[in-house]
Length: 436
Image (tube, rainbow, N blue to C red; front, side, top):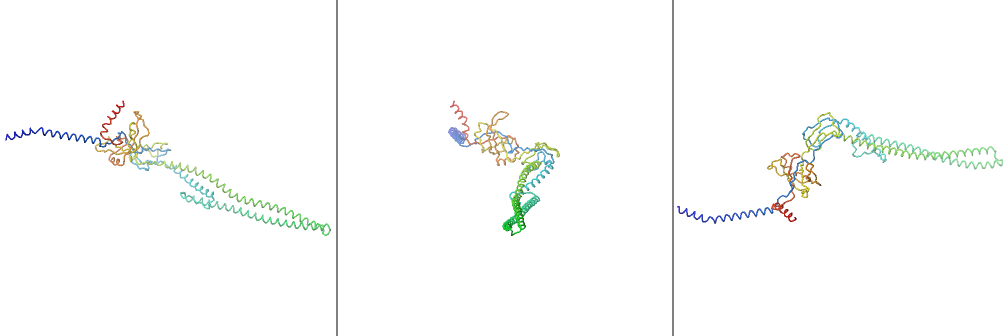
């Protein structure tokens, strides 16, 4: 037994150097393959290339400060500090009794003036009926009043012109009769003149008494006077007929002059009332302080119902709800050539547990056109803003992001291998050394 054991130990000792050499060789091969694999991975595997930029979080859409432009009396306060509000929600109601009454009075005046303007334009255009625009929103009473006035003025004008036309026509008939009478008297005078000439010859011969001759001469003189009077009457009637035609035309012209005069005044009045009404509506709208966006009430400065607020006084602030989050960073000036809108950004929050908070994807939306200067340190920088993507907003749903939180922005500018990262400083230093 002892002999066998000794023989086996002698055999193991004899074979030990040969086994050790085999294991050493295998180890060398493993190390060599691993090294070559690492070198291959380092040379070929892509790694993200980017720029780390420190920044802070902000909400797209800054805090909204609400003011009252003219000052007013507070009637109701409907919100408290910290209340969540929605866009369009009434926050504070100012007393609007006086301005509402003023606005209503101006509205009625403007409505009446606008209807009057439509009537005057229809009269100017000599329209047969008054038609209001399709978008007219005035009262029916105003429409009926203007239509009644339009019809009454048309009828009055037509009646006046008709009376004048009839008067002129009657004068024309009188003129015709006078002209015919004048023609008849002229013929009578001609006949009487012939008779008088014959009687005068007979009277000279003593065949006709002188009294008869004198009677005929008296009749001739009377007829001459009648002709002259008829000529004067014809002339007068001619002038009256001409004046009648002119008067008939003047009635229409005078009506149109009155229309144009009223039209000009009414247009100016409508313009003035429109401006006053818009100003009153502006003040009336400002009596309702509403939320411009969804958000949270902060900095409430009004607490007393019935109190007064001064002109341009700050009432409250609305912090918008984070529908879109922005990362606002400051990039070094020597790296700005690698930055542009559209680049992918990974956001890392130092305030959260890095083990459970993933990197949040975002996208560069703006890079400042010129460098800015830090007022405290005097170091120049370029402002970079990145918007969190919808996917990133989902990842942040369980975290409460507040404006001003610090964030590390990693702006991806491309891909490089590990060897490129390792040898770039050496290459840069070699290039500098060779240049020297």
